[in-house]
Length: 198
Image 1: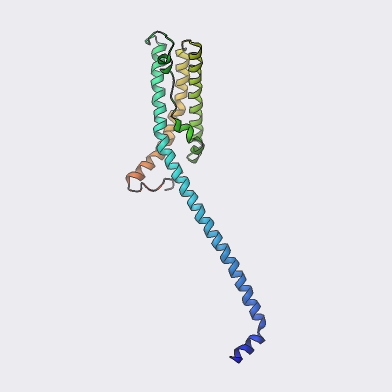
Image 2: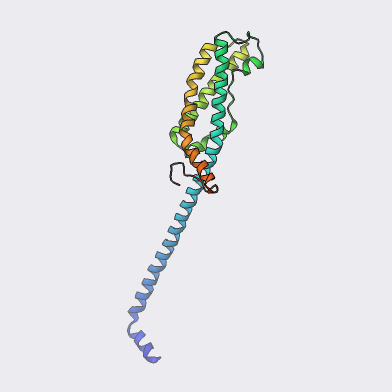
């Protein structure tokens, strides 16, 4: 034991080296732990983003289809009015209700998250909402004044507004199909990355 003690006393510089190396290893270990936690957090954020995107696709697809169907029904009513096949003008909710397009509340509720899917898709949906709201404001203004709707102008405007709905549905279809395919394939609990990576 005394030989070991003598050796340690003669090599005191070795203790400083051991302490320095130990300190460096401790710092490297702390940095590695922080880095691993950061990567785990990023993976969790990606999973949450993919899950939110999946929920958006599942909720937006039927809502967009509903808006497109409502727009087509309204276009049919406007076409009938433009060609004189509609009943004569009588002010009231039935008359104006035929020319309104209902927007599902879900479109506005999740609008801030639609950018998770695609910026172009979000721009199309925003354009669609703006055009439908403008159309409805025109109908409401006519209703407040109890004036008949200019069916030809309204029909042409709404026909132009139908394009963003169709583009949005076409852009969302591949994403929706991936969600449905994933669900049918037994991976229903896994979210789909909207960018295409599974």
